[in-house]
Image (cartoon, rainbow, N blue to C red; front, side, top):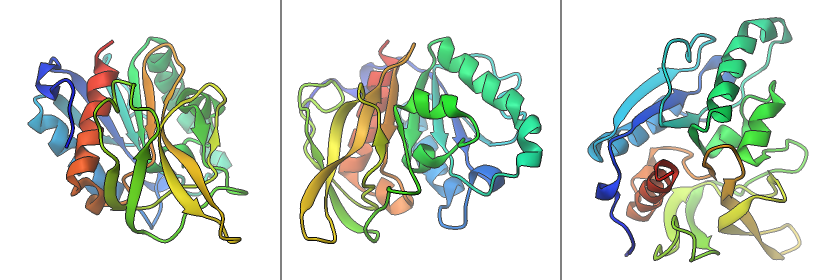
Length: 234
């Protein structure tokens, strides 16, 4: 059960959802399916949602969205293609600098690795040397700040999902939810999985969303709706 402001109070917004593929995708995540789940939920809430696969020109002539949702991963980076993507990253960074709200989902912590501005925007990243997760399964994500508008009145979130552990999180990130994960030595530690990052506009990272089973969870959908409501309430 959740309390707090209804998402119906949020004005209709222009939302751009970027879908990972090829260079920013991988064989283990169906970014198209999870992006569709997000788009359906946000359209149900009355927002105008555009979904685009990530190509070098994906942000050309899109105007200024109210919210940029990044649901992409990290495929093999061909350095020969770096020049072709520079314009995309510059346009994305320009939107951030202009104060466009940003929501990074799941593998967003492990995408756009060829542009360090993205990790700075997100307030953290996946580090192949230390980051990991237990096997996919039923998981609980625990609220650690019940005073933030996103989590005020929100119960812990239960979903079939991955619990990301040992992400590199910026010191100034405002952690909202954690996953309790046991190490090999049996010790259980709380790992940040949802946080608000500093930025010209509002930025949130949400590590949930491995596949569509995550979005079948009512508490996970409630979290996503609250995240979007806060991001748009600038």
